Image 1 (cartoon, helix red, strand yellow):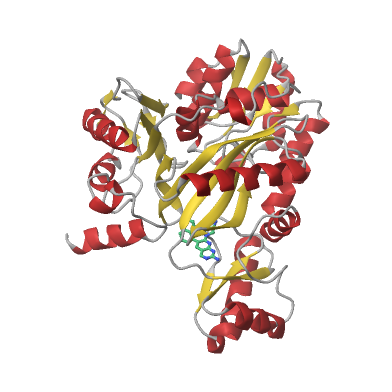
Image 2 (cartoon, rainbow, N blue to C red):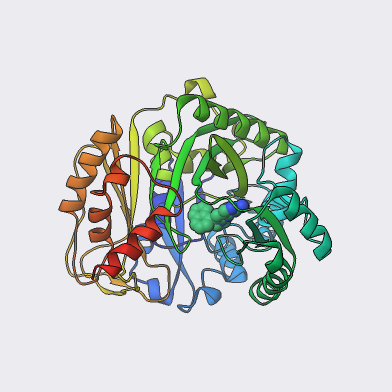
Length: 450
Ligand code: MV4
């Protein structure tokens, strides 16, 4: 096992990874920008290295500085967390070229899944259903027109180098196709430096369901259930839950089986997530995330598995010591992302936290680097805490969540706690009746009522 790991991230996830390292007897190296000198992940780590000024491009994305920090401190492995360099195949390659272990998949798997068209092709190759559409990128407009005619309108044009919802265009009719294709190409070129696009059937009201998988170097693959991530705004997830209230037991089992089989055939290793759109009983693969995700704690809550510990064990070459049949799913979990933002306009609200009192008690987990007196810097993502609640049933989870949100005190900055308090009181949410369109419509209706 490793003796020392460098954590190439900040905020709650750096702390999250540090905690597991500690439990495993592994010492930690924190890296930080000058804006994060007083951050909790820096205080708790055994050692810390300043890697640059506040902008991420010069610090948390600075590959030479991060690799140098690992070499100087003698860290044997680097955990990238999520965001920043977590899905940068070149970074994984450079790390390994310096004799340091990258806690994650191979650079090739990261690269394939980063290319959305290649990812769809790879998944089709291992028997996973994808959204009907062009087989690869669009060659000629005539070819796109033929496919669109076959699958039926509306269709969605996506950028091959996109992802996270950027560069998508809905096209309602063949009359608009030429214009939408050229606009999508121009947008893709300026946003991603690549004008390759592809076309899919547009699904109007799907749920966003993702499957958490863990795979070892020896070819064993398990899933630890799905998460429903349909509640999003501007492609930012707001609340996630496991299991999904929209699936029945048969669908859940089918998803787990097809996901594990695919990942085994791909020779994938470490933790990963398969993202699907789910509509009318069918799962359509859209993307694979080759990293630990923000919402991983809901899967940990229902399975009792520490995903970061498994990532580290796998990176050290150890086989999984449990099989699918050993995983005992228990109850229901919900995660609320707490952002330093105005709860209505969702405008970022950095600043000094005066009081901080996180909720506690049975079934409550708070992942956060906050403390009273901490200043939320303006340079990074506005997520400052995650509240994860576990209960024996969805109803118990909801009752406990309501209580925990009431207890949560963060003053000095505006937060999205009040948004969550309102959201979890809505009948549609309580009944689990929501899809990827629901939250935007709800927030739009709220602001009209101001
Ligand atoms: C779609 C879609 C409808 N039809 N693809 C958005 C992010 C990217 N990962 C894929 N996305 C979508 N792809 C087809 N063919 C709708 C979305 C989408 C979405 C997906 C998941 C969660 C929230 C979303 C919000 C808007 C659009």
